[in-house]
Amino acid sequence: MSDPLNLVFGALADPSRRQVIGYLSERETATATELTGELPMTRQAVAKHLATLADAGLVESERQGRETRYRLTQTGAEWDDRLDALKQHLQRRRGRA
Amino acid sequence: MIHREIVLPAPRAEVWEALTDPERLEDWFANDVDLDLRPGGGASFRWSNGEERHATVTEVDFERRLTFEWEDEGEVELTLDDDADGTRLTVIESSPSWSTALDFQASALACV
Image 1 (tube, rainbow over the protein chains, first blue to last red):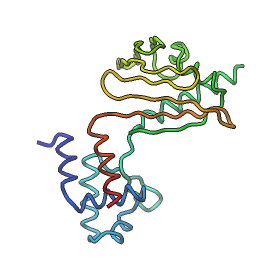
Image 2: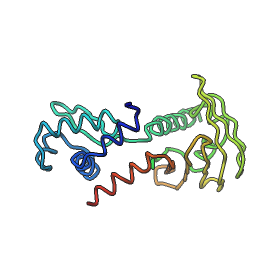
Image 3: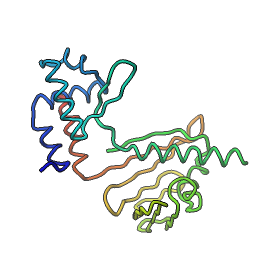
């Protein structure tokens, strides 16, 4: 069974993956290369752990130029959209006044 | 816990109105809004995609602070503060669900 919670707990069960999460929560973002330099793991192991964490929705990646940066999944994206809409709403009203 | 802060280019009174007047809310938050602005009052939000959410107002501090509880899960706190460029709006949404436990887990791990 691979419901979302099983994936999450499966991903968290591994101490190396918890190290990856701990590192990302400290530094906000990191590349696989940076993680390999900081943690006692091979690059292949880091890449595999990042893929498992991403499958569980705990980590997301973002391409910046040639590198891929990883970070803990940010919650509350809906508030970014709502606050953006609120700001535009206020600007429209002030533009009319 | 979700935490957002934004500085809005309008005075506090106007931001408060945008947050609490159903007609204003219908211009940015949802397509159809009912809001009974008093502690214990009900709030309903409907969107054009058929989504619908209900909440109960828990605290109303005029032009300062508004809190409500989603019926499905979580509490939202909206706080207004004066800012040189208008009004600073702080949003905190807390949820008792497992996502909070994960946030806690991540910060606990960061301390190891």
